[in-house]
Length: 114
Image (cartoon, rainbow, N blue to C red; front, side, top):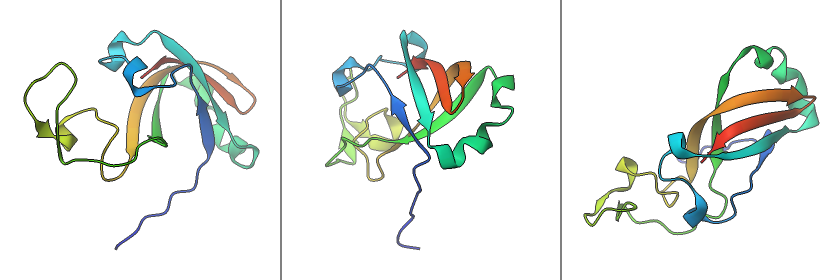
């Protein structure tokens, strides 16, 4: 297998606009936002309001080049990119666990964005 294709199902609306604004670790995040699920996938949200937290898989859409060895934030030793939270990786995907505070139609209100 040489390629994997993902179909976007929504958009994360976040107050964060630069990598430097992201919290060091998710537990320190005070940022809230919304996930807008595209209408054709809205039925898939049925009963999601029964959960306190959800896992969000996303694309680092501003990520360009990557290096397999990188300096993590506040570290002076190079580490393997997979041992860091760097958005600059061979496949620019990330996973976050966020608190689900409300569901309004096809919009998920979330807390703890990183």
